[in-house]
Length: 528
Image 1 (tube, rainbow, N blue to C red):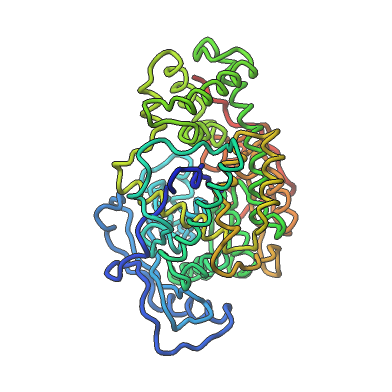
Image 2: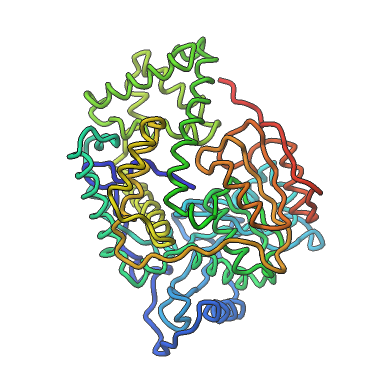
């Protein structure tokens, strides 16, 4: 799952992007058709998919400003806002592709990608093929690489919960509360944010921002591509989207890889998943501290985990009383440093900035961690991403409404796992006062016709802890699990590890799965 830390731990919300796309934009919501017949969602999806197959996708050069140069092409797929009303209001989803690089005989269809979130855009995926990224060369010969913006994201009728131009100019509030007054302030902000989602997005769209509907959208995209069965790669939240798709449309799956896996159990989605994240992030943080200590001759931040942690606590306390440059307080600090437990590719970069700051280079930390309030486009994109994250997770399932439960659970966790606990709580607290009906999650499990799914997971992943892969493996009969033992980066298939890379290629190119689950050693540990 994608985390943008401390969304609601600010003095004013980092929020707002644009309201739902203006009527003039291609991704906008259309007016409802006079035929307002209501049907089961499965029927509505079949109607939408049939229409999409007839229409196809009109591929053309991507719009200026999207940063997607030839040979990548872009197009649109129309889907209903509410699948119970297939002739009602619609939105257009942005899709793009890089055509397969092989011969007509080598081509096997389209490979559709989702990077996670919820709230992540997949439009950069075709660039992997267009740029001849080494890990994907063989796959690119066989498949068109397809990316898309899910409903509400980026160019696909973007939703909003607050105004990004109203961000505070100074550092945000410390996510770790010192008093009951601090907690009351955060509760107020969370409730205001939830109400802002309703006011700026509208109930009609907000109530349909669910993973199940995004899975239905994915099947309409499959039909628009004129593919009988879906080839799919999902990472992080994209694994949950894939698991839901596999449950709803088992006979529409050809090949599916899910990488860094969300636990799809109904009692996990989403409240418990986020609590489990807090524990896992603390463990991976300590892995990074051990690495920093190993290279004390480079970074000079301590030669033991305890010494590095003491310096972290001192830095955090210092930025609380005296924000660096007046702009980097504990919230900004955490937002920057959390990339280290997410991805070991960030270990050296984060350690280097910290080391330079400790040596007196204040600007290094300001440049790395301070919010750029002048970046209008970036702030709009970040707010939209946060809005979609909140909308999907809050609408997908019923959340606790008792503040006493939130307070008790997070206070207990924070005592042992303080890195992420309170910022994660504030990020999700709008779900406690969510203004539209919360759904019942899809009961993820395999059904007749689902082919073998390939699951890839590192044992020490912080964002999607390893038990989620085990549970998904149990629920999807016939799946195979590749475990990257002793590694912890989030997102494994895009890293160099021949034990994994060769199996991903074999599966996508030939449909080959090992007879049994596989344990691979870790990819190479970073070196300063």
